[in-house]
Length: 110
Length: 110
Image 1: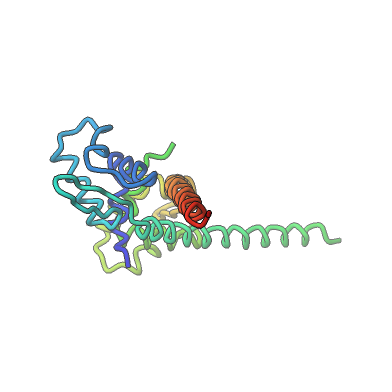
Image 2 (image 1 turned 45 degrees about the vertical axis):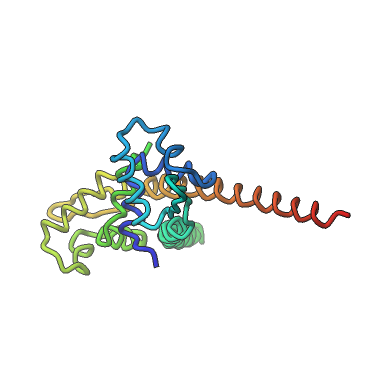
């Protein structure tokens, strides 16, 4: 079970969202991930650690090269939570529509 | 355009997610929203201010009573971003499937 606090915390930073977007196209090594960001490596590695702790990525090391991969579980947990709120919200709007249609029918009745 | 940093920051706290879930069933006054939470009112109001700044809720005051409503734009921005990553990810898996099927065909060919 993913921890939603840290799953969403990971997404509250543009650098981390860019890393996730890059990894959704496939695994990448740390130097490829760091290249687009104008940031000192230690700061960049901190973002990777936060993403790993939040369940968004996993990494494996071969020699001096670390490869990162996206884990789909975190995205699924985030989408599930948002989808649940949307369904509740839409169900409420449907009931509201029914209510208003009903009121309008009553008005039109002779 | 919603600021995704603050949109997702709002969701990184269980109290704020509970407020959003409650408001997805319809508007509510502050006392109704605060009731389920064992928290001092100033702390609770701070969460409401964060949600308002993040674009998740709006509120109107009538006399001493403040009513909060969910704004669907923030949820839409969050779902859009997550959906974009999922589509990229799924497209990659489809290409991987095609590649593997292709390799398998080649092996089976005489």
